[in-house]
Length: 467
Image (cartoon, rainbow, N blue to C red):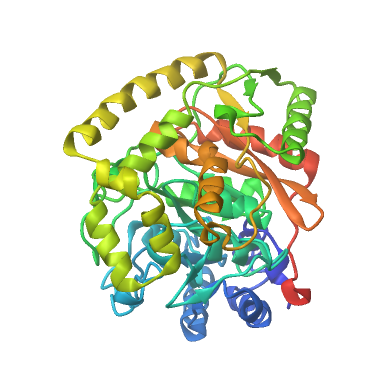
């Protein structure tokens, strides 16, 4: 019983709904695991055990009365500190927001509760969710459970570190430039970035999202199995009228040819050899499962998409973002904004409009490409997971980080779903590959991801105690 935390979400839900174990049993095991490992990795930064046990009690009572418990009945899930959860501060890793208490739940939180999940705690993020590293002045430094010298990723670094170390079977994350996919990659788990419009979003505690946030930022799940991602996506895709962009798209689309494009070096980013080898292996496994995989020298514009996404994300309201970061005094946030100072200060209404206009052209090119190749297999990053805080080691290091992340940054601009799939370890360093599919075809990413997971093996829980 005390190792229920090792189980995947689908297994826990089945045990709870069949009354083989209680939600209280699961909650107790999850809280014990959290207490054992969180001090060494600082993944969960707001923990209220009494709330978790109260949630478990409500789930057990509902099951005892014969009520429908939900697809995630009794599953411990963490929530990132940048979305509203009633009674908790929506800090986004910023001291300036430490008292920004949410009066209502975000759609994500309501969807998880509706599905019967137990909200185990709130996970850390870099200040303003700007970086691929997770450290801030309010909540402190999150460590990678595999190796504390490596980044846990960001901005959903706390979420990924929690799942990797057995703190919850699932985690909520957000992604505007790789913030789900990169932490999953860095911590050796799976992470799904859904299509914009798939998962409803809204924070009543905060100002309305800017344009780039509305059209490219998403919430999505991180997990230790593809099946769990599939179930979590279904739960998170619940309609919520507060999001004007939510779309009632089916979770499974029409049959298409099982054909994938393999690109080892998209945008000429200089993909390292260990990742090239994993991509080739993943392609061979897909072929063995009946997929047709064709290697292509390059893809439709991805580097340009990444550059334009950066302009929209960083450039929109640049001076206000810089002023807030200076007031916060966070080194990481300042490094991101000062590192892109030329871009930020050159972003005008005209250049912003041009970027949005160009977006339609690039999306069209990708859609036509995906008529032939419904799935694309490419790197998550050009490099193995970075040394922690590498982006603070000067402009050259900062630029190296951003160059390596082009395969992540460009995807939100194109409105595509993306899946980071674990492919084993190189030494103590996790590795992974990325899968892309057409808009609202997360099912294709998950189908290809399941083949790769079966070949490489699912992620195992990491014990960070030896770090």
